[in-house]
Length: 69
Length: 155
Image 1 (tube, rainbow over the protein chains, first blue to last red):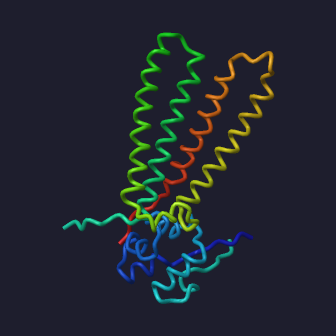
Image 2: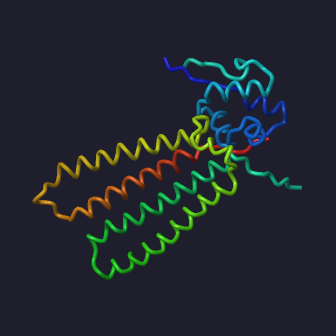
């Protein structure tokens, strides 16, 4: 069984009315990095995941979760 | 009204990498032309030589642009971003290196199996140019293919 990482970054961005570029600038990564994390093409490091969670002021588990395929 | 957004250092690192890989692609074409020099007639060789000079000029322009971008738009304190693992472009760079290494290894193995010291059809320079062509072409094309993730700006 394959385990994949899913995320709700897009949901949180929409709630905060933020673009990918805005979030990227706040986290200190490129827009491409944020967009590839959102579509599941790039798995972020623990540091980036925690930075995103800290920015949105939620636990990291609210943004990232594991899904069994 | 369009708001002019200043490009972040992380995005400038991505742009720098894209320019660098474009330079590698142009360099691969030059080596490709040098390789074909052993396979074509003199007239065509003359045309390709001119093409190679144009490509060399473009390569120099692109390389200088990438260096200028790095020095002018990426502050010294942000240059750690070039080696940051927290970047999709770094992942793509690493994967491109792997692809290029594997194919270069396969090519070297093929050349060593199919040629010998006394029965090689072409001079050593031909094989060296061929290897450089394949290595740089795979390296640069891998990067561009992998980098083209389908991502659109969302608000």
